[in-house]
Length: 97
Image (tube, rainbow, N blue to C red; front, side, top):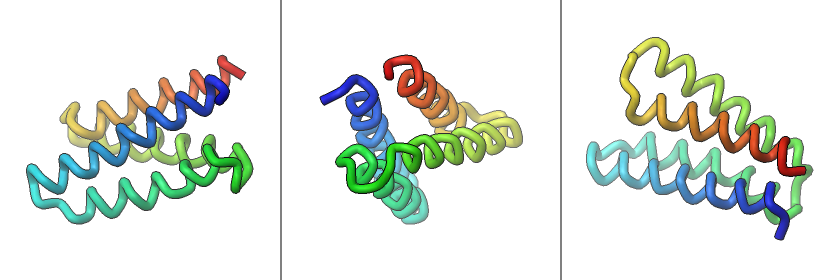
């Protein structure tokens, strides 16, 4: 397993765990569904079923969306944390190739 794939798997686990926490703490079904839907193409990319570019596009979309949400709300959890994790995952995937 390559380093960029390890980064992707760690991100997938954190993404789904965050959705699960949002569901358990706040009863947010949307959080659980959204995290699962965004994790699906990342899993497919990590397994080599879809092109790696799909993972980078999804990470970029999550970075932009969570970054805008954080800028608007000024609440670090969960949007600020996810924006930072998305940026770190995207950067590591590029630098570790």
